[in-house]
Image 1 (spheres, rainbow, N blue to C red):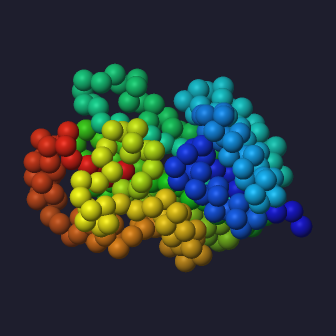
Image 2: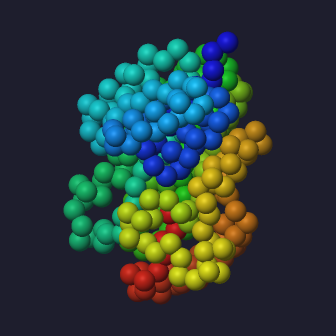
Length: 268
């Protein structure tokens, strides 16, 4: 029997790379995609040598229609797909009304259009085999509208809603669906956004999580048949606090924080 195969987008760094490492340790074959060819090749070599698995890579910029279609064509040729991890994404801190709309629209193309297109290709294969798992990497900020994060918060909220809709339809086909909603993680994601990892020892201990911990929780959570995965006690506390906080009060707090945005953290 052939090894199980997982497709991971955004696999050249951060959570995507960590998911690849965890699954490789469990003997999974991998199909990795990302924008940085050299990084993907390095990860491919490392995982094949260390774990003796098959690792296929496909460099693809999901903003480019041809490269996305080439990726879809490659996926269509796969005989089996046991897991899909939609991890590709990015963030920004631009003023929506001052920044280029086309530049901001790229986030919708990656977080929504590309993710949905890949899911559309993968699910029929899983349904045919009556088995599979899909993890859509969303964010805690899907539940926390934030200043200067219009498309980021909205697109991450879309992934949560999409995952819930999928779960309703796909559970009868033995396909698990998860929306992974982390908070602060010590990854390149926050570094590229220019965010400080932590301003105090206490803040780092309370708010920031390690990539390995987030991925371990996510993979364990798949077997629970619960769609929403919020890793970390503090993140769960924040999530439930926001749910019970009156919206008018939340908006006022957020408005005050927007004036301090340059020196504050953004939930990612």
